[in-house]
Every structure is written in C-alpha cells, then in structure tokens.
Image 1: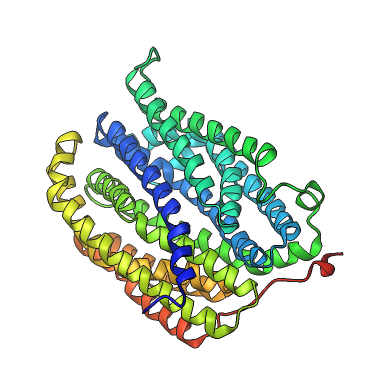
Image 2: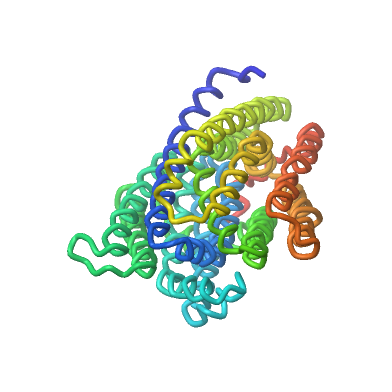
Length: 461
C-alpha cells in the first residue's frame, strides 16, 4: 500500500528513526549489561532476569500511564493546545511517580519475599533479592523521565528521548564495568554492582531531564498553573481514555511476567530462565525497527485525528502504517534468523551457559524470527492505530483477552500440568500473536475505532 501523501512518509521517517536509534542503543547496552553479568555465572544472569520481573510490572504501570496520556497529548498536539497538554502531563507525572514509589518501597523492605514469588529456586531467589533491593528506587526516577520523554515524542520531538536514554544507557554500561569487576578505582561488587550502576544511571537521567524541561524546553514549556492544577475535567478524560491503557499494560505486564515465573518452576529452570533472558535481549536489539514504526504511528494517527481530519483520511493512513509495520517485522525476522546462525556461536563462547541452555536460547530465537512480522503488526495496530484513534477500550480487550484466555492458560497447562518440554511450551505461547493479528485486523476494518477526543479550551474554564 502506498503512502497517503509524501508528508506521511517523511513524518514516519522523521519520527521512527530517532525512536529506532533510542531503542537500539538502549537494547544493545542492556545486552552488554547482560553479557557482563553473565560472565559472573549463569545463576547471576538468571537471578538478575528474575529480579527485573517486579520492576517490569512497575514500568508497565508507568508505560500505561505514559501511553494513556499520549492518546490525549497526541490529539491535543494536533490542535496545538499546549495548556491542555500541560494538564495531561501533570496528571501523568503524579500517578507515575506515586505508583513507582509504592513498588520501590515494597521491594526495598521485603526483597526476599517479593523475589520468592518469581522462583522456587532458593539460590536464584537470594541473588535476585540482593540485586532488587539496591536498584529499587531507580524506577521512581525513570518513571518521571518517561512521562516527559513520551510527551516530547507526541510533540514530534523524539530526539529528546534518544539523547536522554542514550546518555543513561552509556552511563549504565560504564558503571556496570567499573562496579561489577572493580575497575576505574572502584570496588568489585559483583551482582550488587550491576544494581548500583542501574540506580546511579537513572539518577543522572533524571537530573538531565529536569534540567532540560525546566530551563531549555521551548516546545512544551511547563506552565505551573495547568501542570499542578489540571482540573476535574481533564482528570475525568484521563481516566476515561488512559485508564483502559493502564489496565491493558498492567495486566499484560503481569501476564508477561508470569512466563519467566512459570519457566522458573519448570525442570531445569536455571537453563530455561537464562536462555529466555539472553534471547529476549537479543530480540530487543534486532527489533528496534518494529517499535520505531509503532511509536511513530501513535503520534501520526493521534495528530491526524485530533486535527479534525475526516475518517477516510485516518483509515487509509492507518492501513499504510500497518503495512509498513508488517514489512518492518519481516525484515527484523530475517535479521534475527541470520544473527542466530552466524553470531550466536560467538556469544556462547562469552557466556557461562550449559549446552542445554544454549539449545533453548537458539530455539527461542528461531521461533521469534518467524513470529515477529505478526508481533510488529499487532504492536502498531494496538499501540499506534487503535490508541491513536482514541479506541483504548477495544485495544485493551484484544490484549487482555488473548493473554488471559489463551497465553497464560496455555503456558501453565503445558509447562506445569502436562510438563511438556520448553520447546512445545514456547510454541504454544507465541501462537497468541496469530490470534491477536486476526482480532486486530477485524477491528481495523470496522472503522469504529476513529474518535476525536479533544475538547475546546473554553470547556476547562
């Protein structure tokens, strides 16, 4: 399908490229972190992977708030209504900081109790607890940062997030190298050093973000009157359109986090969790194009809808973006397959992994390379098209129904009831993307998802 107009193609490239670079740098450096921790041993790598599970849930709360706010911000950006955008940012910041602080306190006070929920392997639980307690409050700083990064992205300034997260990721890798192995005059702290490096890099990220927002930003300058006193009307709109996204991301995150928990209770759990951690990090590096298209689609659909464009214009733009998403997924799948066969043998010489863990990681990557085109389409369909068009409730239904009516039961039954091999369990889980692809296509073709949800500024007065 051809682009609806040349401006759409240029806008997609202008928005997607910085997001791709941001995701590539972040994912690559996360992989480097995993490699450094993996050099300590397979148990350390598996323990770190399990420790990130509760923080992953907290981040999904924040991502849900950020994404829900993006539905409103992108449409109000189409109207150039910066006062209302400030109202949305104020509400988003309050909830993101509050929820992440609650998570941080619980993990800091009860690290072994929280990490004990992720595995029945006592050794892995102790490693995860040591890691999680130190990095607990890093999620609070990151939560506030992500609200402003998301707002800037909706205002067509994706380079802000690219710069901020690149600096943070580079700091994290350098600090990891120094604190894990005792370099640059610092003590060797092992797994605790990796956790401290994450905390310090998030603090640096927060300081830079606040400096830019308060003293440099001219695109979306903070207007205290609206930021700190958003009003009941925008709060009601936020809950109406953002709450389904928050529920969506939270429940999806809980469901996704159950997968490593299920893996952690299978036979040979250390091999499976280590393989899942490695393959997941590699997939995130290869699939940066996928998320670049999806996040750019949110801005493009939201801006077009909020500016008052007719339904046909929004529909055809969405169809082109979904086509681009599937193509991006196909390219990513080929790259991932090539990486699996040509680069994985080298990586296995770096990691301390058993032969069984290597076999599982290779199998997971091959399966992922086949399913990525569907996953890419689904991500753009839900995050970009449906949410950008204001249809957050249907997007939530598709995500949650496929997760809890299919993926989680399939994983639980196949792994813990039937005790099938991890290869069969993994195949059952990824088939969820095919089901989601069918449901998303049906909703897209209905055109019922196109809603202009903006208000006139006079309504807030």
